[in-house]
Length: 323
Image (tube, rainbow, N blue to C red; front, side):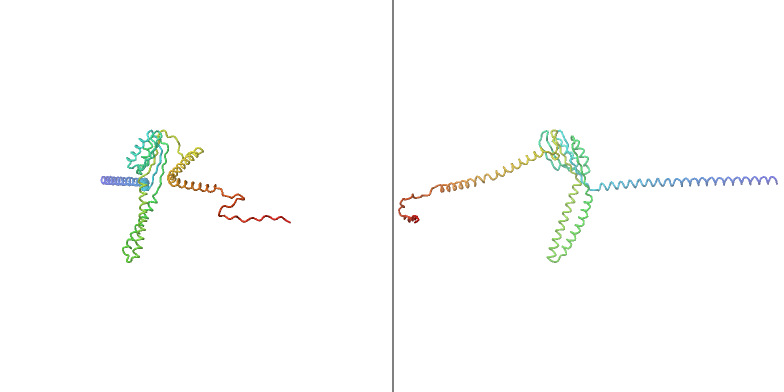
């Protein structure tokens, strides 16, 4: 009996110990799960701001890309004017024309004066808008840049307005054409034809403006003045004073004298053909009139008998003396 009870108590103790160990294991496992859940819950708020920040960065990048796209889609007219002093004007002019051609443009105007050290060349270059600044820098490298002026004009709103007006005008033209097809009288036909012609003229004018804007935005204009090393005089518009006024007045006087001599040379043949004969006739007539006035009148002397055939005048009674 004692041995059975001892075994029973030992088995009970082992079972109780095993149960306690199992409960301890479950508690540690639940604690680890709770800690893992706690860690996960702690990491979730930290990950959420990070994801939100990343999303914000992506949103900002997308907005920036959209803004850049909108800028690229705007209609902007670029114009530039510059003055460069070079050693050889002809060589620099050829290089400037080659730079415009390489960029996909062309030379719109070429004016040159003199061929010595004081030579001047004015070039008007048309280049694509994306290559505008690159060509300007290339032209500045031809010599010593003295002046540079760059301007831009945003015509996006005007372009959009023209597109809307063109679409509306095209609809009006189509409406007039449908009415013209339905006209059943001569008066209606003439009236609708006149209205259709007016609408088509307005549409052509709007389309011409659109083409002009498209040309100005697609091809930028660069006006470059290439001067030789001997050109040191400042621009005339920047000079003021007495000498400048005197020079301008002298030039005006010379121009006026040139015009006067030109007119005189034009009328001189007419004066020789018609003026000389008329002047000679006038001189002869005046001389004959003077000769007539110089002949004295014939007066008979007192007491002389009258000429034959002329009766004597009656005697004049003498004056009576007073009594």
